[in-house]
Length: 196
Image (cartoon, rainbow, N blue to C red; front, side, top):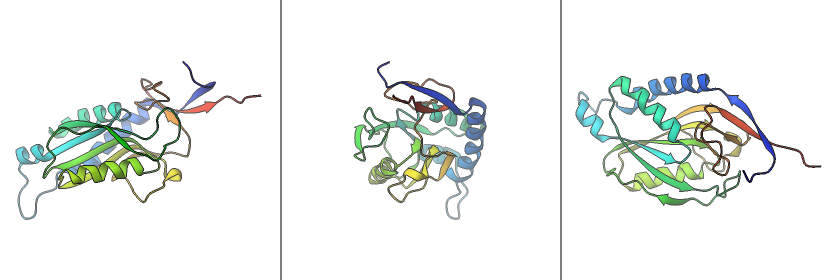
C-alpha cells in the first residue's frame, strides 16, 4: 500500500449504517412514487418511470443495500450507474468534475433517484443533477450517505441524507482512499500519523 502512514478510526458502525439505510428507505418510499395529479398511481407505470442512478464507485455498497431494502415495498426500479471524477488520488475534491461513464438507460420523463456516497463541496452532485435533467428526467431526487456541510462550495442540499459528518476524510462502505478500504463494513476516519 503506497500511502502515507495513517490509521483508520471507526466512526459509523455496520449496525448503525444498516439502521439508517432502513430509515432512508422509508423516507424514499414516501416521496418517490406520489400519486399523479388527480389520478390513482399505477404500479407498473410508476415502476417503469423510476430509475435509480448510482454515482460510482463510492456509492455501490450503499446503493445495493438501498435497492434490496426497497424491494420490501415492491418497488422494481431500473438501475444504472455513472462514473464521475473530481478527486483523483487525493483526499480533497479538485473542483473539476469529469464524466468517465455516462448513464445508458433512457431517462426521458423518468423520476430519477441519484445516489452518491458523500456530499462534500457539492460540485459533483450539482453537476450530476444538471446532467440528468438535461437527459429529460421529469424529476431528480438526490440521496447521499454522508453530508459534509463544512466543505460546501455551492448551494445544494440532498433530498435524503444518511449522516452529517465533520470535515474529515473517511473511508469504508464503498468509500476509498486512493482505491483502498472500499471493502470495510463501517465508515472510518483516516488519521495520518504525525511526522517528526
